[in-house]
Amino acid sequence: MNSENSSASLSLGPARAVRLASIIWILAIQFFIAQVVVQLAWTTPFSLKQNFISDLGNTTCAPYPPDSTSYVCSPWHACMNASFILLGLIILSGLALGRSAFPRGWFRAGGLTLLALAGAGIIAVGLFPENENIGLHRLGAGGHFVLGNLAMAILGIALTRANEYGAGLKQTRERPLLAIYSIVSGVVGLVATELFITDHYLGLGIGGMERVAAYPLPLWLIVAGLSFARNAPPAHSEN
Image 1 (spheres, one colour):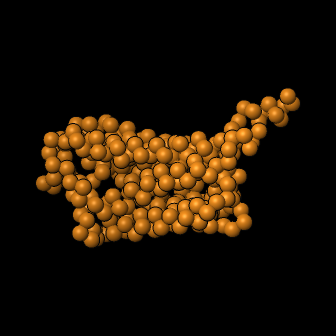
Image 2: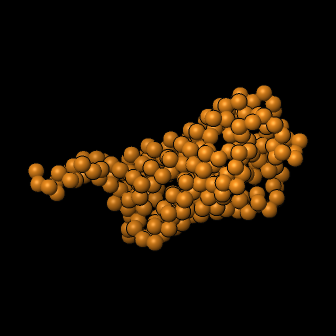
Image 3: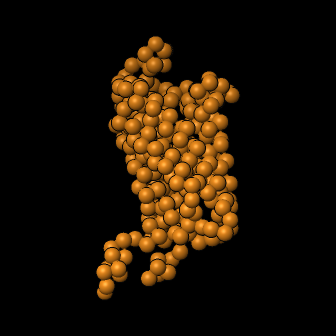
């Protein structure tokens, strides 16, 4: 075996890398499971309309925000904060392995860069709970809401490019559907973010609108992961 072949055998080919990335991104479902589990531990009422997602990671039992009448007490806050950190790591590891699923070019480069920053932001949300360092917590959440949603839209545009597809995926009818889903998810998330920060909740409450802004990204990871798993070429095609 020559040195070139030896080197190749030590690395994943594009198809294998995308398959592994797809599995990792599908694991983003843990973010939703963690919320349900942590909510069950609350002894006070938890409202999807009035409570922030981050209330689940709040490390004290006290009114929050401090000047409000909302009492926050999350006994399993460590589980929620670990889920935030894990979601960020899922994003970063998945994009590192699955970048070849997207056509090369400025849209891929820009979208993946923004997605990486969003992943780092979500890790910051878990490392700095809302009641311990609200500045860094908000900065991380902003990365999720703004950069993460923008990344989806840009990567959706990348997927619309005709006559070219990433080396790690087959060209199928699912491609335009995933592109449209990506763009729509990003736009919905960005609009919801604008409504959230301007206090326009459209009857959903502050917590409900926050979720409309936050959920498109982890849902997109799951959908993209499933699509990539279905459309990556078989491993033997790289041999």
